Image 1 (cartoon, rainbow, N blue to C red):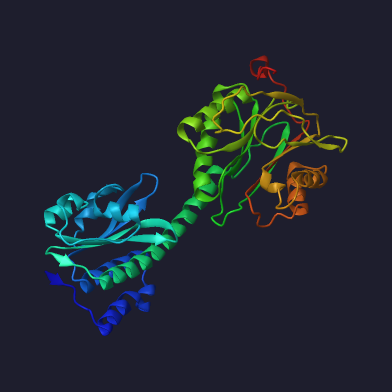
Image 2 (cartoon, rainbow, N blue to C red):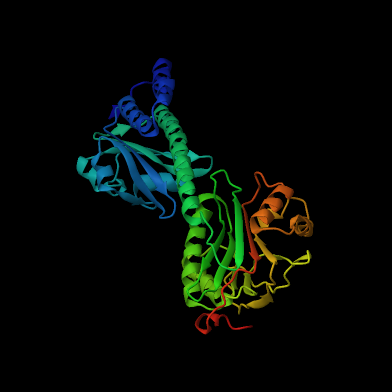
Length: 418
């Protein structure tokens, strides 16, 4: 057997200094990982070194960087978490070494063909969360020492930090792209109504699961949506994007908001299991004097009457989407007088820690004053003091004014009253 060199204190210090060298901090993430793999391969006299990142959704390890087996990256190998030495490291979240590795334990055909005989793997962790696995291998039998394990763990920790920083940057970039693509950059100009909106993320990435949407349907009915997907950040934003697109599709097929939300609920339960969402979907008539509304667990909108009275609409609230208990949903028809303003919002606008939600309702009611939809939104945001909320905030104001074309009989038909 070949024993690992470096049993003395001076050698251990030299090895530690080699992988903690502050000069490495000047490298970008890919350069840092490449240099660390090269150094650890040399320090441990290993023939191969590889980093496998966890694909949490697929529950697989993906080979992302190697030294000595570069073809593994090119061939895009993915390793199930229950397979081989790397899988055992991931499952146990502890170092695993094999002095005489069984060919079945070797993660990939490339390593088996190369003739790897001994392997050592350690988990890459971020707190208690698994990030990936770092392993080295030798072509001749090798007994790895506790010092070897400590050194490899040190490298794994440094790679984990660098990888997490890169993932964070990717998440923020993706979140920004989602925000720009999913939230309307310009609200449609629609005869008979004046529309304005606000969105303030409650997460550092700049986007979350709240959204608003406004679209004119071929029938000349106007679709109004405001919703809140459970969770925060990029994951909630991705789910939100899928729900937004699905609801738009259902809106083209359904002339009743309750029907569209029923279909969206089925979609969530089948394709988005485990996610919850509250949604308000309303359809404003072509004459703009009537609104058909269905609430899926969402807070009722406020209506500012022409005379200055502000009150929440008295609407039945059905179960949120994704609960998994299908029940009939209902649509309520309400009058929308000229010069009235409907204000839709998500709970981040009114909820505060250690405060009854009724206090938030009263605060919002007091903040709504007559004016254009843009003025209404600006006043609400100012009076409620929204700067960096603990939760996402979406706000949508819709004011009815007199500039509306009279619909023809072909477009006047809309949702049936319930």
